[in-house]
Length: 428
Ligand SMILES: Cc1ncc(COP(=O)(O)O)c(C=O)c1O
Image 1 (cartoon, helix red, strand yellow):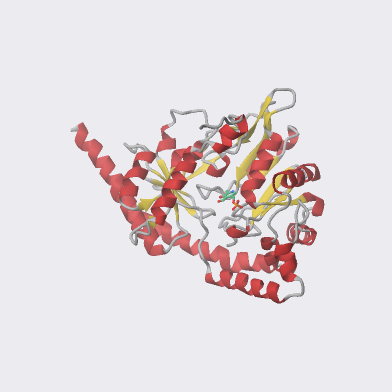
Image 2: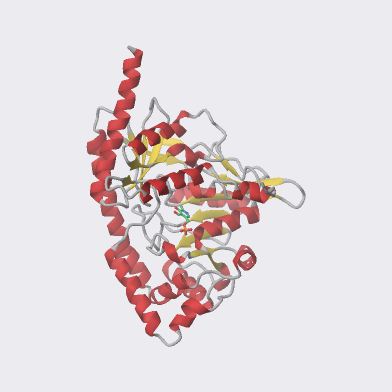
């Protein structure tokens, strides 16, 4: 028997392209092959010094009077643990001078849930029957947003400018000439640093986006899953940004606690109260454990030291090694570009004129046990289907062991070279 689905069920319960791809990656990983080079996921790297902090905190929680009860046996209020909310507000006030109180903060079940709530709160079908959308000021953008709308077509994306900074270096920039805030735009959203590219929107781009949002009475949503002050996987000098019409999301995942599912949203009290309501309806309350593990670190500011002195240098070192390995593997005979690495965990590689699609490259690489994410998935909401660039890029994670990243990049270079050679031979 086949059950019928609602519109909500059709959009969320019937699978998605990226869902299938993640399944494919998961099966390859589960095969347990010793030769597998998993450069596809967004899994943060295990950092021994950071894991030691979590272990110590778990021991402290067990030893503390009613620690276990606070972490495991209670329903927190839907918007999050009051002590945790106050601690985050104080940290942000003291670190950046932002005027925020605990009414400006909501905890969600991971950043992912925060986006599901925020996007569907603001965009989609409105009570008067009109439709509103989320504007992505540039794509490629985080794949995890793509299928979150409970109705169709939640996003409108603007083609970026491509700035070439060297023989193999480039950076995307917001094309403000093309960025139009039409009345159907409900919010502007960007990840900073960006997954998949490692791009960090400049201070100038952010202040222009913020002014546009303010003028049009809509929020600017900044996804800070990788940024400052924690987890601090940001290598450029970009200034952290918040204003009363800005919704800033943070997460404990890339700090090394993805299993605790803890997202933190800082925003206008009206939207924050709505998120609390949505958390209550969808899940009663949120997981407590991440908040209890990190509470004293937030209160003492230790979370800033850990991010600045341990996590950031760890990823910056890995990034440098991966970029050097890419330079060696792709050399100067190939027409290739790598996005400037300003944060996050990924290299974003572009092969102009690639004679096969990034999806075909993915299939060829999978046969050689190298797993990456083909680039076209990150261009959702972008109307120009014919833009070849979308099929010429791939995302490669460098969170894995350096030998695996290096070997994977060498195989990617071999396959890209082979694809160009095939087309040359076919042309002769
Ligand atoms: C840019 C970005 N935003 C949000 C998330 C969601 O993370 P989580 O739900 O683990 O907090 C991720 C996860 O990889 C991400 O890369």
